[in-house]
Length: 526
Ligand code: FAD
Ligand code: N01
Image 1 (cartoon, rainbow, N blue to C red):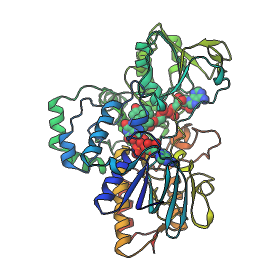
Image 2 (image 1 turned 90 degrees about the vertical axis):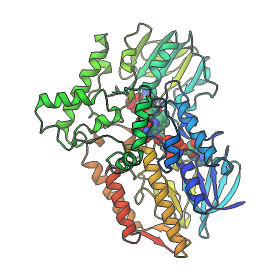
Image 3 (image 1 turned 30 degrees about the vertical axis):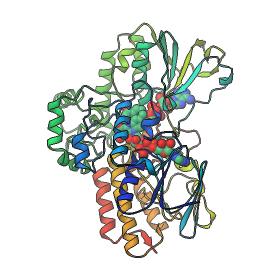
Image 4 (image 1 turned 60 degrees about the vertical axis):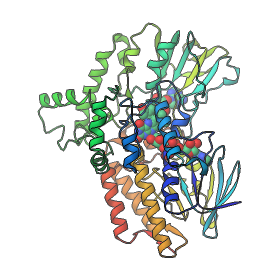
């Protein structure tokens, strides 16, 4: 068994940042990664069209001014290969690879004698502390259709795309799923394939990415004020460097509101959600933006018979994470692209030659699952994590995830979670939230060390208070009105509770600062 101060599980942006920061502060760290490469999401999701939906300049580490000055993003929304090149650059620059153990999946962890025994597929570790940097979207989910073994074609998942790529030229391709992954993939596949069939369950509101090359002037302008830009993002609702309206959508007259949407729509990407302060709080306010987006979608589609299928209805705009797309709806104008609405004609299973719906067989050479993930809790519940008194995390989270501040779970001392349930997580620029968590955890470990404490844990009362607060904030919004992975609707049987913290990046930061000022209120250092 290898002894270290801290085991970090996962070598994505969170695990790498934790390794760098904790090592700088003198801790012996081992990063254990199930995959055969570094980069987390950006190692796994190699499908054509994959890119970030937060501006590249913001979706990058903010801890080192030299790093941010020297890296040159080529596109406003960087592609997966470019982000992976950035990861490689960071790994080399800070000499991170030597403490990362690849092909090492954590299968079981047991708390014993003020530390953790960590079992993996590739050896065992003993650590005082464990940081779960296992990601929000790292356990891909299949649609589980019968007959797959009999299918003669190729089956792929967007999150397990082959490293060497796949040539889809001349192929009949089916894509199941129209979330962010499907929406990015579809226009690119349509360009290559002989014929594309898109199997859609819930139509999505999607925002145009307005991607483009980053000019030298644009890059220089960001770099001239990069520190201020980061600080503004840390003090914004979502960790994005967009101005937030303080106005209600209902306070302005309809013509002015329309003008405002027209200006915001082509320029803000994901920030469009912030066009008015109450879009996610008030149904009438949301209806104004939902109508606007439906109108924009309708204007892109030249086949009117598709509109009843493509226009999202029945849930608020933004309550299900809206994709940020590049030419998604326009793709359906092509004659070689077809839409199957699986609400009308569900897929019943695979056949030897393709997919069977309740209406017909669709012959396909390649079937792509763009069906998403066991989001937020999947990777935390996959290994068996045994805390105090033999209680497992699966038992503790039987009715949904419970944390204090998203950082720790009562009964699981010396175990920390980065950017997971109970924190802004997927409702924010995740990279910024990752860095905030890692710094905060490192400070807490230092504080414990300075006091001679071996164990850091949270009280059940503090946890109960935080869970109530997370739920209360979510219930005051429109989010619970949609079926989404925010609500646990991604996997049948998951408890239906709101998983991330909706109080905003700035609000959450203030809470963390108050907890420290109150001598780590809710934590016990012993
Ligand atoms: P991950 O990158 O998911 O890394 C976790 C790692 O842990 C994985 O490599 C996994 O293999 C490993 N792991 C899990 N369980 C175990 C185990 N038991 N043992 C060992 N290893 C394990 N967020 C944004 O804010 N902006 C974006 O533009 C954006 N784009 C995205 C695009 C895609 C295609 C996806 C899927 C997500 C995107 N996200 C985006 C969200 C994304 O999850 C975060 O931005 C961020 O990359 C998460 O980093 P992470 O290190 O926390 O987790
Ligand atoms: O997954 P999703 P994703 N039969 O869960 C459908 C990030 N990300 O991989 O909506 C038929 O959003 C499902 O239908 P429905 C981002 O945070 C970012 O696309 O459940 N269909 C849905 O259409 C994102 O939110 C980017 O009715 C089935 C789709 O599959 C998150 O990752 C790019 C089905 C799944 O959508 C996840 O995105 C990619 C079934 N059995 C990802 N099961 C950026 O742009 C599921 N579906 C940065």
